[in-house]
Image (cartoon, rainbow, N blue to C red):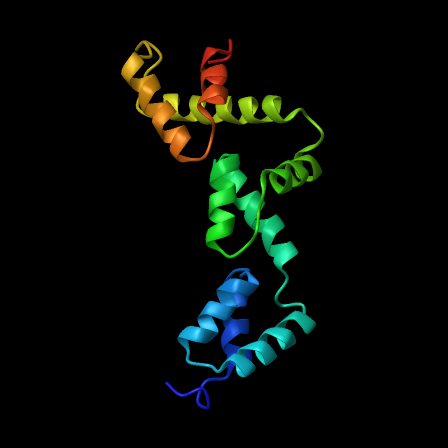
Amino acid sequence: MSSRSFDPLNGALTKIAKRDHSHWEIEQYFKKKGLSPQEISSALEELVELRALDDERFKRSYFLELVRKGWGPLGVQFKMRSRGIEFSQGDYQKLRGEEFGDQEPDEFEVARLQELIERKLRRGLTHSKPITWEKKEKIKRHLVSRGFSLGLINQALEAPST
């Protein structure tokens, strides 16, 4: 498809209307559409001027979405980078503090983990069944795959509420 038959601004605004996108994602979209580097640069500048494209806004909203979906610090960092956003543990701690208060990082993560573990344990279990070692290991593997550290997972599993 030639770049003349594709309106980059309208195409990007349509994508952004469905969900927020990072600068990098829209740049990749334009490249796939065959736009020249000059056309890409011009369109990106216009989107920034229109405030349709804002990496800081994207970073905050995507962070909240990932935390709500049960992703841990390392998982959030990985997912952000896969969307073209530089994201460090410092960024995670800063956004966590701004969005969820100044609770100590470990306390915050252990509380989140306990909630996620409780949710996992409630699925398919009746109250009369004991929690098996295999079930705990399965939960651990799931949470590690979501970007939580094994130390915090063990702390959450040993805590009195689980």
